[in-house]
Length: 113
Length: 113
Image (cartoon, rainbow over all chains, first blue to last red; front, side, top):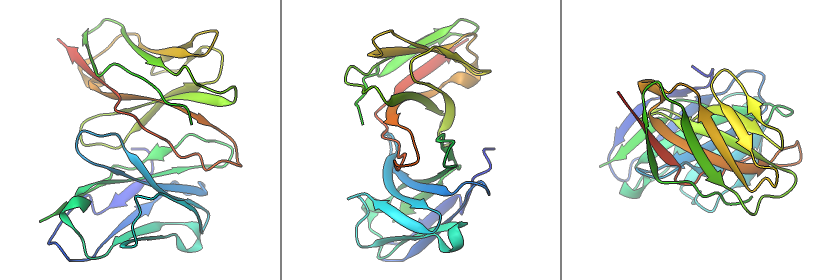
């Protein structure tokens, strides 16, 4: 257990539905990252927060995806109008500022039917 | 960030040392070498990182060549629980960078009894 938690751990939804995932980082960490991992591939960067500010977004983050980190604590990742191609593991990681090592949560596995 | 090249897969006998190579011939002087591993269906786990000098912790040793163009992760006494995908990543550290990790395909290490 790294101290980063994610909920839910698994989500099955129908195409076109909206889903929201939550990440609770290690409490003193001000940096938070979202990654996506499809089967057989390494994780791919989606977006980065420093405190409550979203400072970088990948091209992978289409306009159907939105992420927030209110008050610089937990973060949510919402996918609107899900598509089958959104099926993946969504990973959250956090790190401190001086300590650059990222610690990952267990991930949320999404299956879109 | 520099690209890395790793073998797709390796086998290792239980109890023996596992030596996982990584090439990063285009690494810059301020880029660190990081190793993570991912056990099936879990989030990536940080193992070790280094800049120039060899590093050792309770999990592994990291040997970086003098020209820094390649490195080797050593698991001194591999166990079945070390079966995982191992990722070698290079990136710039520091508060002015996002710190995002760019994962390749990694090396699938199979530890056999």
